[in-house]
Length: 168
Image (cartoon, rainbow, N blue to C red):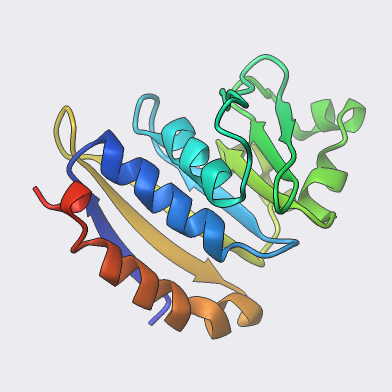
């Protein structure tokens, strides 16, 4: 199985999901977050930062205007928000390749802006807004290395759905 559907009844559960994902991530991982504005991409990234051991006082925000924010933890987190990118040519002035192909973890909001430059080896999380509080997230793995790790992800994420924060 290369995908998992996760239902979150609220922000606390989405943060917990992000934290668990952050704990599972390894150096070189790329997480592409797909979804409309307000669907919870930055909130999940905050949870991922927690799971990577980034101190809670480090404020994780969407880098809408700076394009890339960096945070130090167990692994270096590169948080890219490509919403304002009008074309891949704008990437030439940014250290985006170091972000995606370094020894840290890259989380990309609006990954469609990369077009063909989006790496094939990655984790995709597609957000759907179910209601004001509820979100559905479809988590998919791409690439041989990630398919081999998916069983561990499934075990961790299935167990998470029994947590009191994630029960509706």
